[in-house]
Length: 300
Image (cartoon, rainbow, N blue to C red; front, side):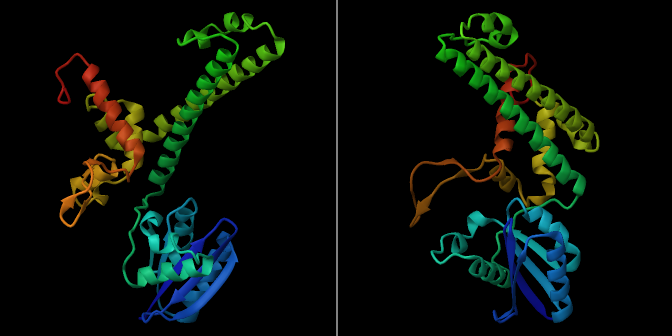
């Protein structure tokens, strides 16, 4: 059966499909509004008209996982590429949807795609979103605390301890202007609401974590507790996706790189900036927590 290579330039309002044959000749080009119905319809018609294997390439983005799930039953293969590695597309001064779709199709035709891993198991994809939701609420809570302290500093109330949150009435009584008191009180109320949502998100994450046996195993590691075990599992998803340990280190931003030219080093060695930032954060927190422990654990 013949193969047809399809590139999708996927946007929130519309998507562009470019299909080409083995020789690189465009055999079909379509532009439609982005919706599940239009995606299914476009690939159903393409498969029916061409009667061939469809190999699809789209770039990683917020819609990529959804689009992949929609079209996967209708095509032979779906590959999600890393846009940071596709400089041929990103840096083109004549960039537009049709050109991008053509280049995406051409890259998969030449087998030159830098593929991004997308987990097949739906429950693990959902768990990752649950963990990211918890992290987002935690960041919002921290940002609100910083904002409250900053607003108080403007009024000359410089507090660096946590009593600024536990002794709220005493803090509010020090503000002479009632409008300013109202503003700070609203921020306190928003902080309480965010904390309540964060606790609900933590409960959801804890309940869902029971599906994954590795989370209980990870908590036996010195310095690792429930939250970081959940984060680690959610971001790694499947350790067998890495062909060797060094690739996993680089994904966790712990790989050491040395730029060079003509066999000579350029600059100093440094940690690889590409990869998953939360995994590096988890590693740092685990090491710090393990060092604070009184037992003679392996990290010490």
